[in-house]
Length: 478
Image 1 (cartoon, one colour):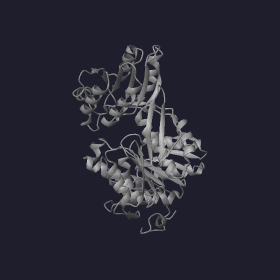
Image 2: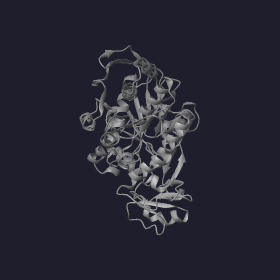
Image 3: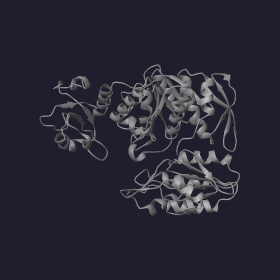
Image 4: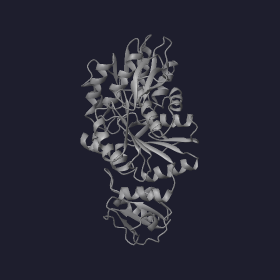
């Protein structure tokens, strides 16, 4: 494809472009290299390497020095790259929706995929768990990957016959224009609580990045699904209306899809719902936890707002399977105590998780968790306080310490966790607590969810909460 077809205002527009990337290590002859400035590295420093690898053109904000290689200058090169990736790939599924929120994105987009698939659509989801389509799972690296990967993945999914795709929209991805160029048919907001302050700096900036999905990316007239139970409901509804979107609210206080009554059972919940003032038949949701109910309702509201009949959506809800590492049931002890794994790694996520599990616990509620290193340190004592308040037994362990001293991270968490125990080795913590479980108890292992490695220093060591718990339940070594 010609450079001028990707960037209409580019000089030397007849240069042939065979591919594009923002990673100098991936540059191949004939490719465009986007020299983007990041929080850790500056792409301008890698322009010489990209040219040695055969880069045919360089994209930057004008500060790069590409020598004789054609130089595309853009005020916002990240957005320019995203729009060029769209033009280069040329195709995406007909119906694409994006969901933002601090917690619950992975479950919501996967639930939407399951509801669509159950109704006969060829459907996919894209996010933290990778891209999941008719031909299986593809690892895409990040919750919201770079725009080239996004558009390459959308093209690949369309090639599999996918017509419906639900995407996660992270705050990083929104602020860095990674979703620019995706043709959205609907957008959704789940919740907003403290996270990623190491990147955004303040809650106001974090909120601004989330709102961008509504204010800048959603085409006028498309549905904007909003969690009516969120304290930030008014912010997102106001942004949606100002952008000319159709507000669709869900939840206990929802005005379109709302819960009239919820009956928790041992491994499921019965939902009594209304959809636009019409009482529906009860739905047996095969998931536990109120927050899972709200994630499922968000997916239902998205599907309903795009024209699906309630009966088909209800059938999808009744057949949902939990997402890997999201309140995932691992097994029971011989005495009947249940063990779950969840990804909750924020104060609100942990609070919501423990409150959700409590109604399903006849005995003591136990939680094992830690906090990641090189991430928002302010949340550590907050999570300790929440755990000690909501659970009967708290065990503080290591998460992904990364470059930090694990003992110092644990100490910060313990500073807010009155009466908590400390077992640094995560595997030993899991084995110890599972041996202690009694009839009616519930153990939640929180923080890592679907992850299969533990980051210590610069090393990623194989580790799975599920495998460690299963080995302990079976009496083996974790």
